[in-house]
Length: 436
Ligand code: ADP
Image (cartoon, rainbow, N blue to C red):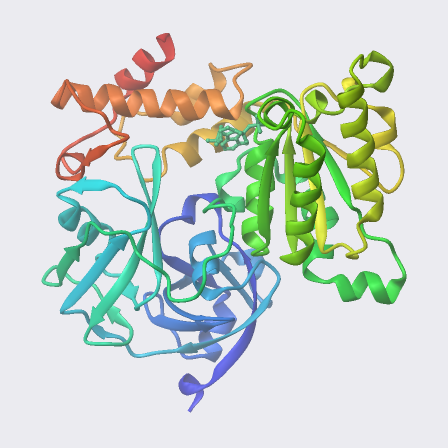
């Protein structure tokens, strides 16, 4: 019987519009081969197992064994883009009760109904994570328990219990980059492609480079104006390859660790090597590594020398990558931009209209938008806005909508999920937010 078989498929990223919906798109011919129809539940087996709903794939995927899933599902499966996983049709029962825990301390007032509505119709299993975006706040919840055990679909009569205590994963926790995925980055498709080739490939397949005798890059410099997504990119790559992630901020190194900066740098590189694959992210690198002739202090000179030595000393064959970000690439010591150090550079520029529309789409994901909301229009009228500006504008619009209902609220501490159901973010909210 065809429909009990498993088939090997290759994971690809989800369309931006599909992210967060808990669905997987599978090429039509592969659906047919497994006897699947739209809405069936499949089990995806990578490093872990996860269940998801099947939707028909895009026409361009026909003839290719491709499964498109979003970052949330990729995390649940423990596999990344271009990885092979096995999928099989599975029978899912209906959930009587689902116990959910947040992954960070947050009080979600009326969260049971809210999460129940989001999960309605979706298959859940114990240990799975669900990412929701509540009015611009990305929150991750863990499915702590499902009754009856196994894969079960949430229905209107499923009892949802939301605990307040944060979820403790069974396996030891790594120092990760949080929950950022490629689908959360808008307008940077070409740049992301470069980043993936330069950083992701060597981190995931060091043996390829070894065999070809090619030296993988140790350092990549991302440069461009603040708020364009440089940090986001570094976090997303680290998250997608499940790499150990360490952030260093240039100014912080110079102030907080003044006098201990070199020691701190050495420690960070050591930690990265011990926990490889790792990504070290140095934000605002221009502040620790300005052109040496412009540097007066002996200390600064020594820090630059230390950084050079540490990068030259990296013998991990692509298993430790240093990503540095700056908006002043010309301020950086040229020695750091030479071969074997930050010798790859990617410009992360200000988004164009299409890019801005993508960023608007990302930051309004999960928001209950009124019908008069025109994201394409806002994208056209926000010339010069970077991603961070758009994220802020979307959040402001949501806050404006909330204030219509409750004037006094601090959404960072307490989210009134029960009223979110009644809420619509309208065109006027966006227009008001744009004025600020
Ligand atoms: P940078 O490191 O370039 O200064 P960040 O990556 O820290 O900028 O961006 C700050 C915030 O702005 C992000 O957390 C995100 O919410 C938003 N943002 C920036 N760029 C983008 C983008 N290209 N797509 C989606 N969101 C973005």
